[in-house]
Length: 392
Image (cartoon, rainbow, N blue to C red):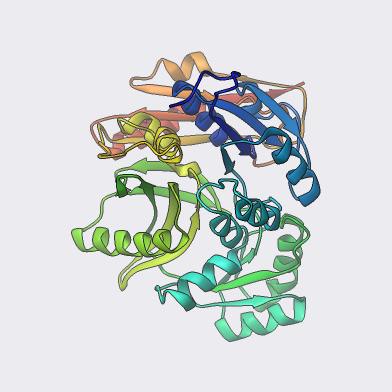
């Protein structure tokens, strides 16, 4: 039992990171009568626009993060991004604060090294071959060992920033520089992955709640430079592939623990299912669940966080999303074409409300449902192409 928001008996959620995914989490939490606090490194982030209160701090500063949490005393601390002072979260959890799903999950998934070593070396899950490098010369050695092409990623980044394919050894230096520019938290370290020939890549949304572990239907997606362009649900898989995917997702999420939704990224290959990455929070490709399921990934996350049951997850219809991205820096722009996009059948648009544009930054998404994923993908892409950004 808990009281109304802004009362002394309110239940409070503090969101660390307040992008478009966090915005939907805030909305779902408020539907359940929860008080919401949005935190980010810049003003007027999407979730801040709908939360009860908001703060702008450097979330990589452990002292600033601790001071704010001690001031607000939230019932649940909900990281929405990786770039957070996770050491402070570990300490705060030990002192009695509740971190979602756990402080250890936030710590291990903050960088690609922690989660890759856990999956491959502790849990013995199938992954692409990999090496880590702290210098350009170490990366040259790693590329020589794994061969080209290979994939270079900063150990800490989001939305594909700093990720590239090293096609020949002549590309090593430029890939290194690109990774350094795209990495977060001044981590001068990369992961070099052997190139995998995969048939498709999916996100398996995995919900840990008081009802146990439940899986959403698999979500297929297309990425460019590590950032998603479109997604669809359900992705066609054999029963064997589904069982392999769920086994891998369960192993990882059981090890990380806690309540909430995990976005487990997997490769489907001729030789089986490979683990790629996991996010202990709603996944960008999972925005499609807002038009396909009875409960979106955000509603599922809110329920699980609060300790409520999630007995079943129903897929109601095939659906797809397609993103609208900016191509330049601007704080004076307009998004148009919404009227035309919404004229298409069974189509919705989410305009995120971000205060500035940056090259490659997602500013909106079109979502469509249909009798098949192929048809939904076609309509969602058409809708997204009707959307536009004009700069002034």
